[in-house]
Amino acid sequence: DALPIYQTNEAKVVTVQKIQDFNGDGQLSGPFKAWDILNTPNGLALSDQGQNRILLFDTQGKFLSQIAKEQQGDTPFKEPSCLTLDPSGNIYVMDTWNGLIRGFNTNGESILKLDLGGKSFYGPRGLVFDNNAFFIADTGSHRLAKVNLDGALAGAWGTRGSGKGDFDNPYQVVTDGQGHYFVVDRDNNRIQVLDSLGHFIREIRIGAAPTAETIDPQKKWIFVSRS
Image 1 (cartoon, one colour):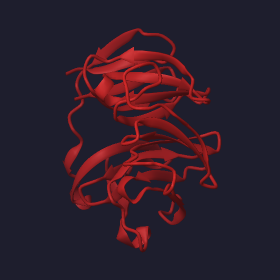
Image 2 (tube, one colour):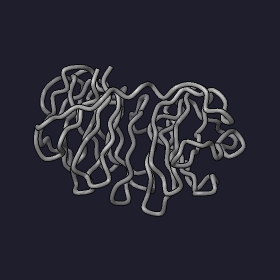
Image 3 (cartoon, helix red, strand yellow):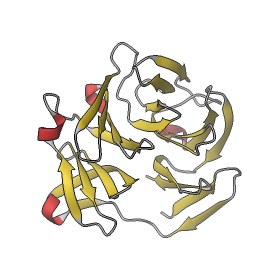
Image 4 (tube, one colour):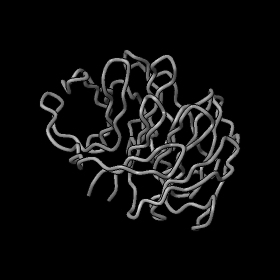
């Protein structure tokens, strides 16, 4: 399949050549199984579900270091999924089956372990930091949720279904920084756009199950991968 690119403010679509799966041998890093990849101030970060770690590369793809068991401490990752940054360049990852948002500074040191227990999360995968809060694509509970830095649940929107504002296995969420949140609504074959209060704005029909997305630095285009 081609890789679709959608404008963030309208339904126009163009396509580019398919990007091959980013799985395999990362030379010094060893074999890995990628889930998400993120631009960082120093290059790229990749969540590796094969070995439950985060790999760090420079902009040319050269392996630099990893956030492995030593940095993770007494609670090793159980399926690190989506990655996000704060304005200071700290990396956050959704630790799916521990039900944690984990944060690490630019030296790979742990700075946050935010427990999502008791808030009805089930297998959350999507994560984006925006306006001093985390927006979460809560896959198993079929909703978009907002969690403050103190761990308080500030909002949750959606239920399982196919209507406006409903979800069926949401995988990922990104933002344009203007209060719009683009949610990969995987099994409804679409991207849903919601505002910061969870109100439905519009949908982008994909035609096949979307599995991941990213937004360009100018916030004009959404890149979507499909199964």
